[in-house]
Length: 285
Length: 120
Picture 1 (cartoon, rainbow over the protein chains, first blue to last red):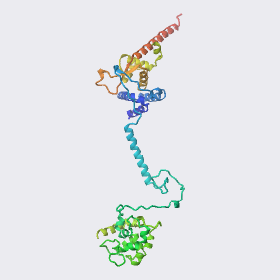
Picture 2 (cartoon, rainbow over the protein chains, first blue to last red):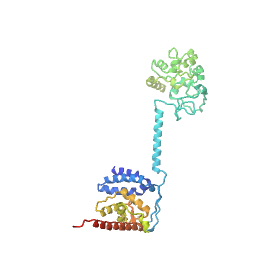
Picture 3 (cartoon, rainbow over the protein chains, first blue to last red):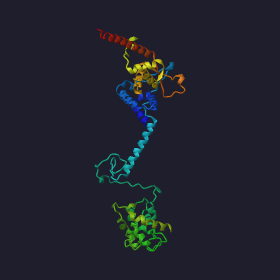
Picture 4 (cartoon, rainbow over the protein chains, first blue to last red):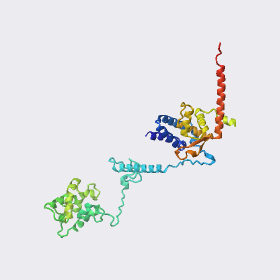
């Protein structure tokens, strides 16, 4: 520890002095430490530090003086000004850690500050913060919907578990759009396997066999089925199928004219307890 | 030549002791410190910072030079050691300083003797 501190003092000396004499001074320190007389060396190192930086400016940038021991020329190679490889590695690792911490902080911050540079939409990828929007949102209302590549979208587990949702989402993009809501009746009728113009709980995805009363629970549990089964009798009748567009729009909480999965899934407190039952019954089919 | 040497005089105590230590043989830094301590009978302790500050200056002036390690100590020598040798210029400066000191001492003795109160 004492040696480490002494070496630290030597590292504070000007580079040229340090490169030339550091190892020798450390060796002398080791000799003195063996005799238990290191305290005077610290005072000497402090004095030397002050002396080299204040009284010896001519040696800080002077060219090295080549010595010629025993008539043999010796060439002194000065230290490079470029950083050492180890310093670059340390710097790179430190930068990555800082970058990771900043990204983590931004992505997990509760008090979201939405930066806005170069686009109207809020994004974490922008660096500068702005609190004033120069353009009104209505001026930038144009939207471009890009159709996903065939097979690129994979329905979420909840959509796969619910045949009604798979039938309604005809373009398989995970969103029940306004046009899909408008055509909901036709889409629902495709699930009518027995041709009775109404959909039973089994046709809506309830697994067989299932305990008594499970159909009612199943139809009330899932918001989309509860909305379609307006009279809550456990099946979606022909009139309820015809009224499906209006019933589905009651689920549109943000009133954007379409239904996303967060509007279609059961509330978390309910789903965590009841969804496995439906999933188990479906697996048992 | 004498005028050139006179530019280095008078020498500081540390410089004088270092040149005196190197006058006998080539020494490494720790050896110089030990020799200075011996010469001054333990009264003058030279720290590494002071020593290498003087070595830096003396090598730049050409009075001391770094040399390859001695053949007799090369085997068991610590690789961190560097040996230093007095150059001919350094020897000349040391001689000039000793001559100056001799003059100072002689003159001082004369003055002290002259100032002694005569016995009545």
